[in-house]
Amino acid sequence: MSAKHDTLSLGIDLGGTKILTAVANTQGDMLSRDHSITPAKEGQEAVVKSILESVGRALDQARISAPDLTAVGVGAPGLSNPETGILFTSPNLPGWKDVPLRDIIEKELGKKAFLINDANAAAVGELYFGAGRGARNFIYITVSTGIGGGIIIDGKIYTGSIGTAGELGHMVISDEGPLCNCGNRGCWEVLASGTALAREARIKTKDGVTSSILQLAGGDLEKINAEVIHEAAQAGDSLANELIARTAYYLGVGLANLINIFNPEVIIIGGGLSNIGDMLLKPAFEEAGRRAFKPAYQAVRFARAELGRNSGVLGAAAFALEKTTNNKEGGAK
Ligand SMILES: [Zn+2]
Image 1 (cartoon, rainbow, N blue to C red):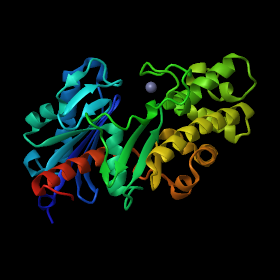
Image 2 (image 1 turned 120 degrees about the horizontal axis):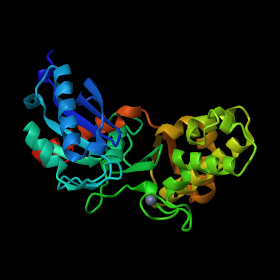
Image 3 (image 1 turned 120 degrees about the vertical axis):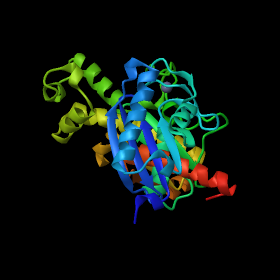
Image 4 (image 1 turned 90 degrees about the horizontal axis):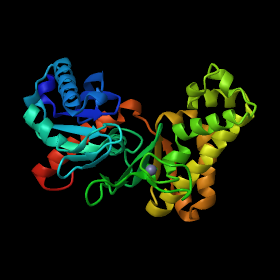
């Protein structure tokens, strides 16, 4: 059977460092996948040009052209409005302000396009093709350099009144905590992300706390990262274990908030830091259990994300298909 007879959609996952583009069908099978670098420092025009080149390669690889697509979905970092297709601002794309990204892509490809926040797209990806299949209400979080999230309510991504909902990483956990990139203090991501873990390790190392972390980082403070700390912890390093326990504690505090507010069926956890596994996640879930309301905690299940790096691109593609189908039928999928 030719791919041209399938319902196909194109997903674009625009990140601060990379662009992932894929042609996918309704089952989440990828007919093609293109990976390239985001020229973020060269500005908006250069980035848009790179996106279009990546789209061209993805279409060629799938042996189709733009008219064969049903829809195009763009997942982008930062605050955006899916209704208007405007990307308000993005911490990863310096200089971008109120960019009509959806319309730019739509015009260039001659195809209906949809814009969604990248972590929200990842949540939609897990909803259709990953750990969220079959769940109606869940929270997705991705813990890496920051903490991103997506809220699925009644089988749909919740985007709020102007589209900026789901910034879970910026819920305030400690009002006088460390300064966050967003300008606030003590946000969840400034306490429980991989960046936070590495920062604390550097502070303790500079203070002269005995540990194998610095040695494992080749003696370079700047090379201290979550992987090195995890490695040290596995080898029994007490500082590394203490730092991971601290991160788990804050992770658990945030999870308790989410459980109390949303009463989700599942909390799906992805992102590089979650690769630490039980050493981090088990104490985090236990801390959440000490803080959340019992019935809500007993009802929630924790799951690891299943789509890895493809969650965003598949979610963007699925979001576009969902929107197109809904617009045509004027109802639920
Ligand atoms: Zn913040």
